[in-house]
Image (tube, rainbow, N blue to C red; front, side, top):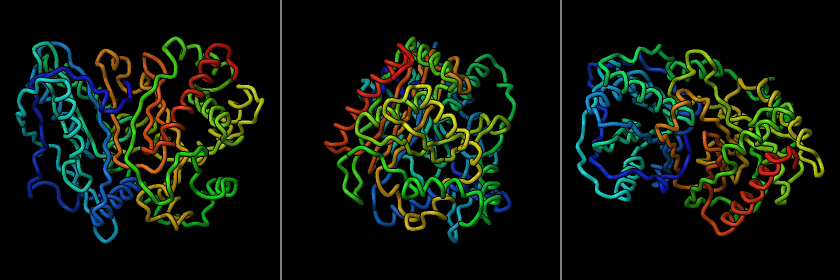
Length: 463
């Protein structure tokens, strides 16, 4: 799977069909099925509600596309999509914000119906790209349903496109969706059931999370690591250390780029050097980012935020949802240090981070930075690092054959975010950043420096 902007989407023309989730009937789920939304969901929904009240155009989506080879089997595809929506309770939810609390009410799986909508033929690649992007952008956090599903059918193949609001999806949810639907499609085309074990519900996860942390206060010892980070950092949010030319309090339209940092062979060589330094690949990438930032004028201590999966290896391992906690991480990147020394610092910082994963980011934000609690975005450009190896995600071994792509989009930003990822073709980074002249220059210079650092590490294992 490659994470790339929708502007790079290249889908051959064909006949477009969409499937839309039929609105729930009054005879379906009731208040007894309600559960509390997670902290991530509550914050996201509140931001959307406030933005709507002030007529502020904030929007985003998480999406994916993939190919099904061979002549299309429309009945099998419709069965696969229905299986997918029934499998994941969070996709069938209505969200209600009452008295300051977000509640989730799911439609019963057995009541789920998909209504096909025949869009008709689209004859150009640009036309397909524009249609898919427009369909994804019309997903609305405050309106049901929170997903879009469709396909481009051709005599020789089918392209499936899926878009989600962040309320019901995260980065790992996209390969999960691809795997679920591709598996179910193959089974249905052969007249079989998917035969896969059930998964946990994100609604249960979020409800349990809220109950578990309801009594957490600012003096709780579980927040001590956050407090130590804040003392060293000078505040809750670690600032991005390079100039982006953004004005305080301003939001900007976004630029969305994907750059290849290492080829497949280069990524393999880099991984070997990470192992020699007693580190994992994400540790090596993070060390390289810290080194590149320092070379570009940043500090000799890297401080940033890093998303960490909350799924675990149990019943939530292949569930759709926003299973992400965001944690602070800090390590030294002194001038003259070798790769193994910096990786050792990353390794120690990551171990410390894992020991303190229990406190949700949004809860810590409210308790420790209340002056920012009601903001609709981070208060300024924040240093953010994310890494995923899509080859190790569910169904990762066949994503390349399915030409799977992930697409994220945000309408506005006041900073820059990096999503590093690895697939069969190498190491890549998808970057979304504020559309200012200085941000363009800073991003280009940083990416060039980082590419050089990684190339040197792949070649010699040293900066």
